[in-house]
Image (cartoon, rainbow, N blue to C red; front, top):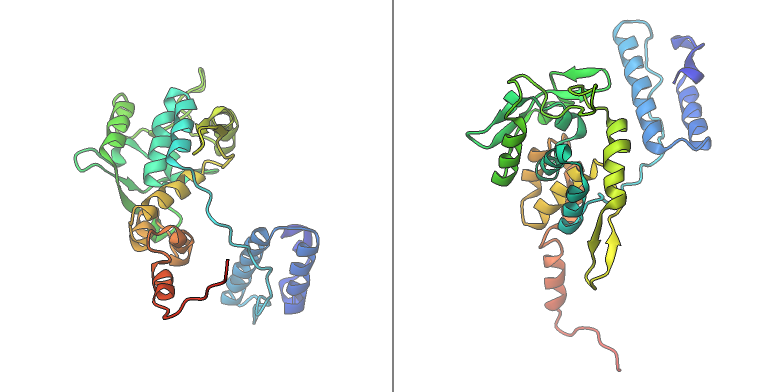
Length: 280
């Protein structure tokens, strides 16, 4: 925002100025998601200015934004996920096992504290998140603060991992000698741990050929969790609550993976009195 708006007075900005700014960003090749984030920030500033009587009306009205292409979620098969876990150094296998079976966001996973794990009920509670500015005591939205069930084999691995930790300690921290016990940094962890494991991970395809695992980022563990559950018949409503999605539209990206996703359509074609045919 600042490169464009730094020298403007709020009251001098018109709706057309905002639209021209959006158009200029698109022409420079800025992505649709980045443009939307920048616009939302400007819009919230202008709304606050109206509330504080700095300006009478917000210029952020009826602005045309570039369409954000909805891409299908990237997820791993069970064999691919297993090969990744096998390639990870020991300290990170438990963290990624938890990622695949809970769908926690990176900040939730690395902001998890020992006392948020209920071993008796095989649950964990998402409360704190790890951010660039430190640990926050609240997730990104009200739905994000939630209870997540743990499969028994994941709980077993987690119990072995947390056994030596203090009650209020972070569950996953840096392990490098001389720098152990610090909050994890997303970029560093990807570069030093995730991508090397992905590079070395292989799985066997349906024809028995050894194939490289897709180069998906750590966030794909979250997509993988949702995809596996939907394929096993778990309702989108349940998946929404498990992952803490604020909008049901976010969860609907996985609808095509439901076992009966096209059942009604196929049944309708089968009920046609005389199906179309052609001569061999």
